[in-house]
Length: 168
Image (cartoon, rainbow, N blue to C red):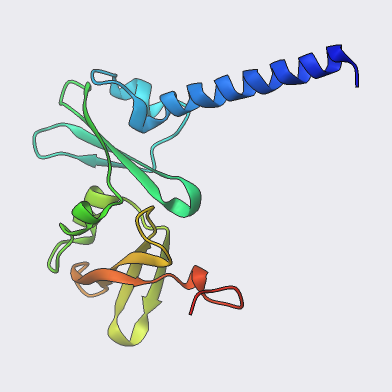
């Protein structure tokens, strides 16, 4: 390999690293306060949910990350300026998910689940959330089919860890 080829590959690698660092800064959770809601909606990532806030503002949800382990919620005031950004898949936020909340309230707090499965004999659906703090566990929210209310929430075993290479 010639010196010229090695130099070009090194330069290309440097450009790739700079581009990746720039994209990380442009990720929804990295937007600075005051960013307009239109800029956020039409950026590199499309929102996965949108919710009206009680004060007339808007919350945009960005569910992403490896296996759905990250969800950023961006709150905009009624004028459309970003006032707060928070990664919500964590234990303090999970602690706010209690029986009686509606499914819509859960979505507004922690976003769309990574996986949903039904439990027909109990007439409910279980919403499953992965997060970086859990090793082979996920946060599960049971939502009644009858009234769309949370009946239970807590930590459960992640089936992705089952199988021949799973942990016992």
